[in-house]
Length: 102
Image 1 (cartoon, rainbow, N blue to C red):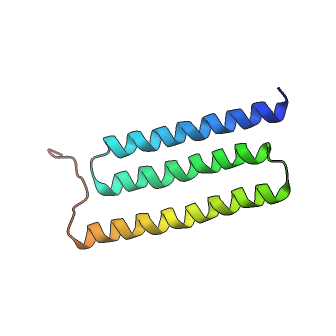
Image 2: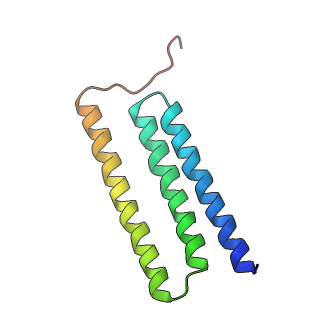
């Protein structure tokens, strides 16, 4: 295996770890706002690492450009969707979580 293969594998594993962390945040965090934060941040970084890992071993420059365009589209869609969900929850009166007893 070449250095590029090792780098690619390391980036893909790191990206997968961020996806797992985002999923754990989705399951463990107490309210919609914290869950959206976990998903939008961890998944976007995880996808960025995956795209970078795939781009390292891409055959041509157009392949790399396609990967980057997909990542940018997902970034915009994720941010927009998270904002709309949080805004809808806020307007419906969903309160942010607070620690009880403090």
